[in-house]
Structures are given as C-alpha cells and as structure tokens.
Image (cartoon, rainbow, N blue to C red):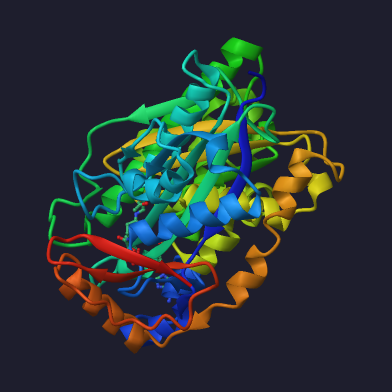
Amino acid sequence: PKDVGIVALEIIFPSQYVDQTELEEYDGVTAGKYTIGLGQQRMGFCSDREDINSLCLTVVKKLIEKHGIQYSDVGRLEVGTETIIDKSKSVKTVLMQLFEPHGVTDLEGVDTTNACYGGTAALFNAVQWVESSAWNGRYALVVAGDIAVYAKGSARPTGGAGAVAMLVGPNAPLVLDRGIRATYIKHAYDFYKPDLTSEYPTVDGKLSIQCYLSALDHCYQLFCKNVAKNYNIKVTLDYFDSVVFHSPYCKLVQKSVARLALNDFVNAPENKRQELFPGSEAYNNVSLSNSYFDRDLEKAFLGYSKEAFCKKTSPSLLIASQVGNMYTPSLYGGLVSLLISKDISQLAGTKVGLFSYGSGLAASLYTISVSKDCNEASPLFKLVSSLQQIKPLLQRRQKVAPEKFEANLELRERNCHKAPYEPSGSIDHFFPGTYYLTKIDDLHRRFYARI
Ligand code: ACO
C-alpha cells in the first residue's frame, strides 16, 4: 500500500480547567512562574467521574461517529498510555465493548507503555501493520490517552489530561515518511511510577529536562544522517515547514527549537557559522552534551531561533498551553493544533517534523508529508474540516477555582484504587458524548454511561 499514514484524527480534553494565573496566586509562587516561566495558560483536569477507560471510550466513539466509520472497517486497535488501572488488563480490551456488539473481535494490538512515548509506539506499529504481509485491507485505529497529575509542588502545574484517536490507512493525507526516522532509547530514572497505589510519578524535574533535550539532540543528529544517506540532503531547521514536539510545558518546546538551531550551528562548517549565526564566536567550542543548562548559550540560540519558533512551532502549542501535558496524546494534540491554526492551503504539501519523548526513556523524531491536494473533495480537506469544533470547545470549558481543583485531586488521591466506589463528581459539565464512570464494584470492575 502507498502513502500510509493518518486518515482521520479526533481529540478530547477535560471540560473543566484551572487558570494558571489563579494557580500561581493560590500556590504562593511569584506571578508569571507558570504562565511565562512554563508558558502555560490553563490546565485541564478530570474529576473522579473520568478515568483512562472513559477518556479512550469517548474519543474512539467520537471518531467513529463523526467520520461515519463502520466498526468492521477497523482491523487493528491499539492504545498507548501510561495511566494504569487494571495492570494486567489492557485499556484496549475495555474499548472492545464498542466493537463486540458489531461482531468485531478480530482486532490485533494491545496497550503499549513507556511514559509519553506509548502513543508514538502504537502509531508506528499501526503503520507497519498496514505496510506488512499481515495487513487485511482494513484501517488501524490508534488511541493515545492519559491523565497527568503530580503531587503538590513544583511539578503540579505541568499536569493535564486528554486522548486522541488516529485512523491509519493507505492513501492518507498525512503520510509517515519511510526510511529516515530516528530513535533514541536508553535507561534513565527521570520520571517513572514505582508506587502502584498512587497516580503520581516519581520525578526528577531537572534530570527529565536534561534527558528530553539530550534525546532531542541524539534523534536530530541521527535523523540528519539518515536523510543525508538516503537523499543526499543536508538537514537544518529549513528542512521542516513545521516542527511539533511532545510538550511537557510550552517553554520547554521553545527551548527545543533553540536546541535544534544549536545542533545546526554545531553541524555547520566553522567558516560558515558567523554568517548563519552572527555574533556566535564565543560558542565555537560548545559541546552538545555539556550545555543543557548553559544560560547564555540558551539565550543566544533562543534569539537565533525565534523566527523559526514563531513560524514553525508556535501554532502547534495551542492545545498544549490550554490543556497542559496530556502525556501520550501531547504530541498529537500538537499536530491537531497545527492543523487548526493554519489555512489548509498553507498546510498542503508541507513537511512536518515530530519529536516524541517518553521518560525512562524512549524518543523518536520522524516526519509527516502533508498531501498536496487540498480541494474540497480531498482527504486532507475532510480531515482538517472535521477538527473545526476544537477551538470553540476549548472556549466552552468551565473554569474551576484552584481550591476546588486541589480538593478534586485530593479526592482522586484518596480513592484512586478503592473498591467498591461510587464516584461523587458532577456530570453536568461534560460535553455531549462523554463517557463517565458510574461505579466500581467490589471486584474492581468498572461501569460507564454516556451523556
Ligand atoms: N516570571 C517568569 N518566569 C519565572 C518566574 C516568574 N515570576 N518564576 C520562575 N520563572 C521561570 C524560571 O526562571 C524557569 O525558567 P527557565 O527554566 O527558563 O530558567 C521556569 O520559570 C520554571 O521555574 P523553575 O524554578 O525552574 O521551576 P521548578 O524547578 O519549580 O519546576 C519543572 C519546573 C522542573 C519543569 C517542574 O514543573 C517539573 O518537575 N515538571 C514535571 C517534569 C517535566 O515536565 N519534565 C519535562 C520532560 S519529561 C515529561 O514529559 C514528563
């Protein structure tokens, strides 16, 4: 099959949020720390009525309904998530409740877990399935979902929640380019979830930033090599029309673009550097591995890359700044943001770089080629126009005071593995079509209804 990639996309986020300016005040930190320092405006959160199963049920049902897909059109289903409830039982099996009534049970794929990387791993599996001898002519459906919550303290404002569903097949408007993507995986304890009774991770914030930036360097350098080898093209930031990143918080993404500019500087011949980066003499001997927290260097390259950031990356941060880190869906929320922030004629025929990072750690840099065809009958037009309700939906969310947000997290903390359990959260604020938890019985079995 030709042009395998994303045919349709759907995203959901919580209908409630806390305002980051109000949270700064409530937490007693200096004004601007979350909004300017981290680059976050609002943070979506879930009450005890939502869990990873309900989020994934909601997003799959929405995608299927909106695009008029038959359940029997799907031949593979898998989930990327790091939000674990039943441990040995996958979220994918819960989603089978949607397929079974239609007689569809022959669906390969289960859950994939490695922090925020699971969605990308699932997407790669799906694309490879369509490209393989195992393919049966049907679509693959990839779901990425998470609830990102942190213990009280400096990491808490970097939470979020949401889910995406991606329909993968041939002749796609968003094609995953073959043979050039770059991966970097190694052992690190930057963020992990060893306490199985808690939803919160154990996180070393500074180390996680270093791991993220170092994974970006390694992936980019390998990507440059792969493209040089296969196409004899020297990659710089100019190679990409857009670059989308996993976004723990938006400021780190801006620093990541600066990091790519620094890589371009390091890769440039010394006699060209001054022309490309005027005033950069002081950095001629810089080493990538020793410069993660070099303030002067960071500032200089934030400057050099400012235009590239505004043009190529800033449009992809809409949902990230409004919802927060969704973990596995974060990168794909970036892709959706890009698609709804630009005119379709500006998207057609472009090349999008995507950087996926999951702590622990696993990372990949790959590219999507957007189809050139954007007329009203085109698959690209259909995909992009199906996302037009996202911006109004972000505005329709309900703001909740920091006190209530914190009380809600305490409620989750106390009850996250309790059974039997009757959730007490209101269902009034949910968007239509949302699945929510009605009860957990004494055997920890979960039951849902749809609004
Ligand atoms: N106005 C403007 N900026 C401010 C203000 C203010 N009043 N106060 C602080 N800042 C800036 C700081 O200078 C800093 O910016 P810099 O990094 O450019 O110097 C930024 O705001 C954050 O302040 P810090 O003091 O560094 O924040 P802190 O250490 O308290 O927490 C952290 C930040 C480590 C990101 C924390 O939120 C965290 O641990 N988050 C979870 C881990 C994470 O997201 N890691 C990223 C990759 S891994 C993943 O995806 C999970």
